[in-house]
Amino acid sequence: MTITLIDKINVEVVNGDITRQPNCDAIVNAANAQLKSGGGVAGAIHKIGGPELEEQTRKFAPIKTGEAVITSAPNFPNKHIIHCLGPVYGKDNPEDILLKSCYTNALKLADDNQLQSIAFPAISTGIFGYPVEHAAKVAAEAFLAVAFELNHVTTIRMVLWSKEDYAIHKKVFRKALC
Image 1 (cartoon, one colour):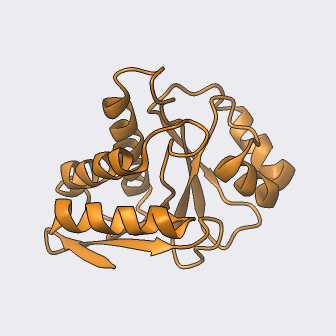
Image 2 (cartoon, rainbow, N blue to C red):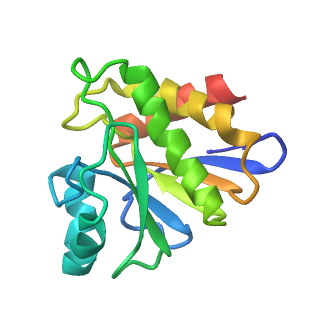
C-alpha cells in the first residue's frame, strides 16, 4: 500500500524483512541503549553488520530514548543505518512523545544526510511491549508532523515482519493519512 503525503512523499506499508530493503538509502534499527546486538530487529541487523557495525555504533552509545544516530551500513546494500531507541511501554514516559521522537528524529537525520528513502520497522512493538495499533497511530502522526520539513526524503517505508502487524498498520495508515 502506498499513500502520498503533501504531493511529494510516498508512505509505503509492506510485509517483509527490514534487513532486506535494497532499494532504500537507509534502514532503521530498533536499537537498545548500548547500540549492540540484541533480540529482534537489533539482533538481525547486527548479525549482518558484524563487528564493523558494532565498532561504528560504539562511539555513540549510550543513546537516550527517542534519540537517533546514523552509521554506514556494512554488509548491507543500503547506504546507512539509523539507530533509534524506542520507549519501553509502561515504563518510559511520556511514551507517545518518545516514540514519535524516534520517527521524527530518524527522518530529520535522513533528510540532513540528503537521503531519499528510509525503511522503518515498528519501533518498540516487540520486546518493548508497545501495542501495535497504538504504535502505528504514533508513527502515522510523526510522518504527518515532519513531512513539510523534509527536503530530500521522498519515500518512507514501514516494513512489518508479521502479516498481522502489516494488516494493522495498513488499516491505521489508511485512516490516518488518507
